Length: 470
Image 1: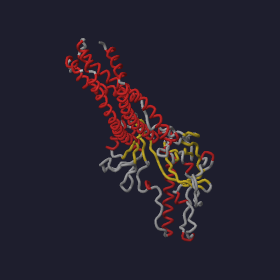
Image 2: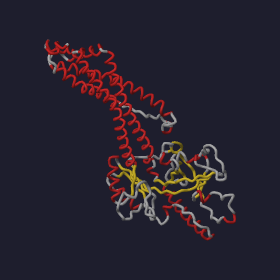
Image 3: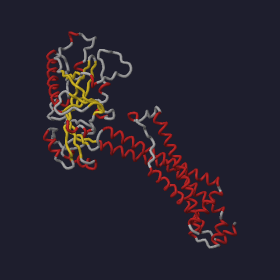
Image 4: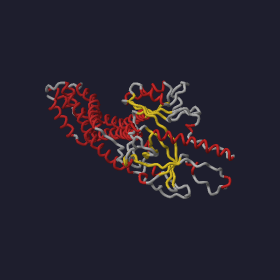
């Protein structure tokens, strides 16, 4: 007998015992569906994490942070990166030296400070970041509306998508509902070189005679030339300006802060205004340095070299590595839960095939008498078991696809999940083609493995004993 004959016999035997076949296949369907859905949840979580990381910035960018005067570091988990006590500065020399390192495409310094924007009675405290105009697009700073500032432009900025919603009226005591967004590109803003606490109006409950006299803060007119996309989370609450402009602003603001502190001390007021903490006794020229690496494969080596030189660094690769490890653990746990159901299904297949041997003992004896080989008998039972696995796999995949569609339709809109990022469709369950193929192959393999013991047992039956016991 050839394999086609054995396939026909196996299909006929399964059809002859429809109820038992149905129940056995149902067990495989449940197992396959469980393992696919569980793994699809893990893949969905991983995909959402990757989207989140991509929205935070570029994985090939390394950020070098500066050390402050108190011995701490700006950035996450900076303190334990290096044991070196050598002082490393973020200055033009560092930019030049880092730019000559292998696998580094370019280096861009960044200068940061905080200012207060004013429009009529409203104000907003925002961070201003100074970038080299040549590298704006490289760092994802591309206006979704308007245009970027051009080289040589003064007091022109690109605003983050949420800057327009952060204005408030300090004279208003009650706020109801979301703040009114300003049309930043079509209004003239005042940039006050002071923190918001330095420019807000005195409380009406304070004694005016007890208020220290304050020198007026420097103020400039500023033009917003473009608004960034709301997917650019890293700069959502930030103004982006040419680095030269921000250096001037920072220097003038620091001078004003010193003048303000001196005036308050002269008045006998306690405390004072710190201004930019990073500016006090700080020898660094830049707030941070951004290093663009040529390929994601080289980020780790470049980052390790920078840390060996004493620089405090961070990158999205650190987050991506941690997230990927967590996703693998989640997939293993969810896959293990689904595998339990498939194990139960495998036991069901084995039980069905063993019962089939007892019911077909005479048939096995007759086949041996008429010349069927041991391989024929073994393969007949293996084919039947694999057919059960295949049918369970096919229906399990179909049920999984329907379940995944239902999950992605119902759950993201529920209050528990709150929808996807920026209103996009949120796929909590993802079933790629490779998972479908793997599930089918795995279900067939489960059938073959489960049917192997009954098949071997069938080949060991004595033909005469089989015909006599029947």
